[in-house]
Amino acid sequence: MAIAGTLAASLLTMTACDLLGSDGDGADSTGGSGAGSNGSGPDGSSNGQGEPAALTATLATASEGTAVIPGDSVAELAAGTTQRLFESAPVVVLAADDEASAVRAASAAVALGVPVVIDGDRAAEEVDRLGADVALAIGPVDDPGIDVVVPADDEDLARLLGIEAEAVTVDSSEAARTLAEMDPNSPQLLVLSGAADVPAPGDGGEQTGDDAAQTEDGAGSTAAPLTSDRDELPSISRPAEASTVTVLSTGATSDVAALGVARAAGATVLVESLADPRATSDTVQALAEDESTSILGLGDVFGDDDSLGWKVATARTGVELPGGGQLALPGKTYIALYGTPSTPSLGVLGEQPIEQTITRAEEHAGWYEPLTDETVIPTLEIIATVASAGPGADGNYSNELPMSELRPLIDLAAEHDMYVVLDLQPGRNDFLTQAKRYEELLLLPHVGLALDPEWRLRPDQVHLQQIGTVSVEEVNEVITWLADLTRDNDLPQKVLVLHMFQLRMIPEVDTVDQSREELAVLIHADGQGAQPDKQATWRALHDYAPSIEYWGWKNFYDEDTPMLSAEETMTYVDPLPDFVSYQ
Image 1: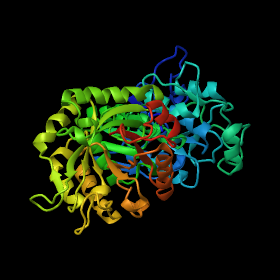
Image 2: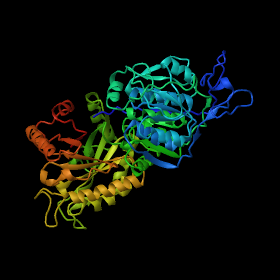
Image 3: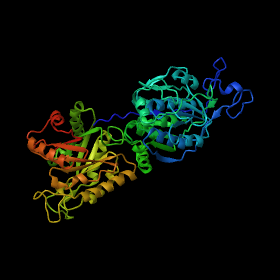
């Protein structure tokens, strides 16, 4: 379940920069000699020295806060980003709705400091909104109703952009990250790997691969080929950068044109394959250091504004989980010692002083590091409320340990970058009441929660005479409370462990609420005994709860016959567990 999360962050400081310059023979380095040949811009304006006044796009005032740019297509995301970042643009890059054109157009936009408009039903409307007079046409597009400049090929396109270096070939998987890192002051022309040379707009050109397929699907134009209305682009200077804006992207091919728009406006771009700013240490630290007042997520994959908003707020704390980032799962394997520090009788966690417990937990985790590509997290599962034979003073058959008894080990675990799970055995109490008792500990970022229904009694039951059970409704009450606690306090995601070795322990567990992204819900199969019986329980639980994504397995030193070694656990337990505990 290892996830390859890659961050490409561009944190460039840019000033408004005139892209023009003499190339020694009267041609402008970006605009060429077209507009300058008659001493006036497209509206006849002049700089008073016989040269055209440089045209500059106007940036929109960025709204503060976090928002999602809706859509999942190249055209939707490019338009949404342009509307957020650009108020007007005298020049636009008009691109065909195919990946190869979008890649070229995005890099052209960065070079010029202007937006990308994707050809289609609403292109003319967007060109009109921007007040554009000239379009640099890339790929087979329809006549936009304004002057067009049509590059003959990639070499001519680079000349029009003032780029002297050869075009840079990128794969689909590289395009977004390359754009995110691109310095507008040293622009590059990007060309999609395997794409033919830039086809003339309107000619349907010779295309290969994805471009050809998309044109056949109707994305390309069937109109007569366009010819240039001008020999050169007008003189263009880049606007002052949108330094208060950061754009989040998953690096999808549909994001490429939008990322060109973002970088053209000078916005910071962060690329991470998971649509969650909490996903990696890189994204968390980049946002923690980022001073932008406007955060934009590209596409429906980021959810709604509220969902992205609280995740960004969490990331900006900079607080990370053991193993990095703020997501407990996927991508990590937890290896835990189970028990309580007050006694050795409940598991290996209490068989030694707490300093040696830390060492032992790290040793157990070390067994698994060569066996998985995931990050292995040493973990302590501490029984915070212990099922008791008698009712006790409160009559609930559960001995609630004081926080002062648990805190030294929990704090020591934090010092050693270890995760902690508090295990509840509530007796005749309910799980939510007991969970709230330990709110102070659950406010720590490295502390999660486990519910042990074996020890959840009805009012007429006692321990060891029957196996307890809990309803999904009661579990969901805990989920709601713990998720709200996590979100309200900008905490990293928490693990919620549900212990089971019989289906009746949590009837209908497959319907448990897994919608709260503040939590990673995990079923832990903690049966003991002969390995064939344990494997049968493992399979039965998976069949009973197929929607549960994360799973745990327990190895018993004394009760299993035999206990699996680390190598055997990772060989014979299928699917591989995300959480392995030892008792």
